[in-house]
Image 1 (cartoon, rainbow, N blue to C red):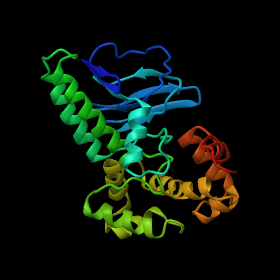
Image 2: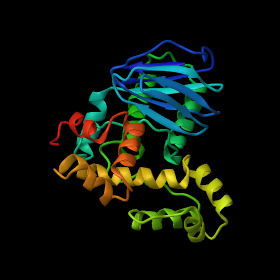
Image 3: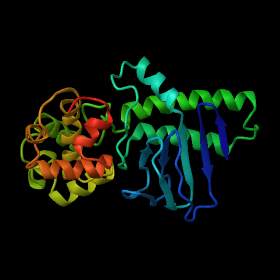
Image 4: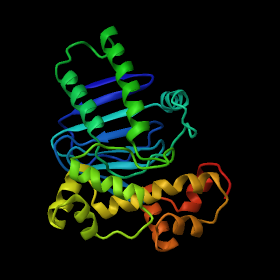
Length: 271
């Protein structure tokens, strides 16, 4: 099933899930896994995605689908629609670069569930007035969700998420003291759980381990300094809780497929 227009498209299919050819699209592309693990390849490394997770490809990123579990669900958003939404939402960077990491967010999952149900019951041809009206509104909704909950260069923090009370306690504590050293035992103590139960619940709720979340939070908090000041990359890394500039560089390379210096240059701001 495909619905498309000039602003983008919705696609849901259950065949042709085997390895496919390389693609390079001029749009943003959100891929969501509803049933299980999927794998994609880029020239700078592979990406994996688990059940209920999503990631976003930026325009003109070469990628190849390697495997998908049971269903392929994706949405393409034209840059012009995302740029218009960013401007209306008052976002300073109206052409964001999304981080190439898989992530969970309940609002995105709820949107996908609603769209899947609609597409499963859709009998109108894709060009009908009702289908186009639905598509226009759906793409606008998703664009807002992407800007609010899709990790990227436009953010000065990690996307907010409401979790179980024990996990929320830890997230609050980490946000308030993200520059400090944290051990798994300390996080589990805040959650009032043993560390094994805590680590399992945290990963189930957010799709990443507690330490990975903390490192990503540090990275996203550092982005504004990187983009809008002339501070050295070493100083920015140390100020935001990283032990060394090499660990900061390594995480940046994993998340954005470029170093902090390249990220700063790519987004058109001063080094």
